[in-house]
Image 1 (cartoon, rainbow, N blue to C red):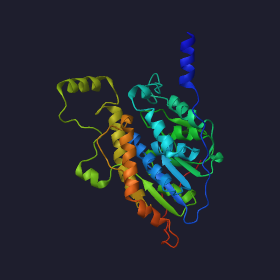
Image 2: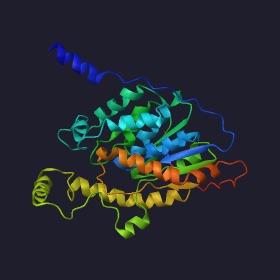
Image 3: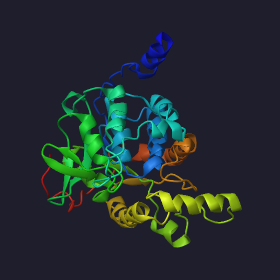
Image 4: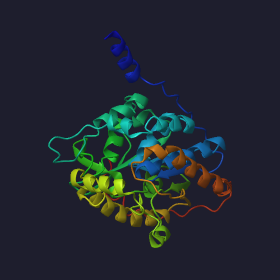
Length: 335
């Protein structure tokens, strides 16, 4: 019994405290980074951040939707790219993910509450507030009653991330300052406009893990292959479809895929407002496949290294100033 209590204490012990990252004054243009939604594929954002750190490229503001908000919040709180990779490694298998499951019974508002995932984030950042940060952090969610996009920039960060990651149908809506909020990726999967309006930056780099129009046309957007499955696998898939609402082709999956189709088009428009858009390589993997964390991170590193000269050029003194377009998606109430 004593051994059991000791093990539980070790498992739930707080992690090493975060270390704040001082913000250096910009000798050249101030850079903002927009991180897209995209489930486990969003771990590619970690690889991009690693390359920027390694090359001493300062980020003055960061905006994120859904998974982008989770990564952006941890980084803005002071965790380095390498530390983010270590956190990603903790979630490499399904057993770890299921420990964060907190089912809603009956599942009328969603399948899970998301409170355990929020608590998991708070093990890293505690009760940190936006006001405590040296950098601007912008987290996007949507009020599903008023249909307004909200750009959250004050209050408790873990509450904001919880709201931004509340995928409709899967995570129950989150109450934030009296508003019923869901996943920010529903209305703004690549929040470039939020950075121009609230980030006080001179340049914006977007990182999108959503499929491009070219990938859609080429048919390279499937999360997983249904071809060449073994007989055992086909039987398992058939049983799974009878029991699992999130199984391919079932209600939640159909809802998620429909949202994703709209996200691809919204992200395409957002890319036009960025100075540069980085697109990590797309490979076959499920949206919740955190076991591939190292491949996702490597994809982010590769695309950032490939465009490193362009990034440096953007920040050079005397480079052509960016003409900021109107952000038609930021007309609603902003929390």
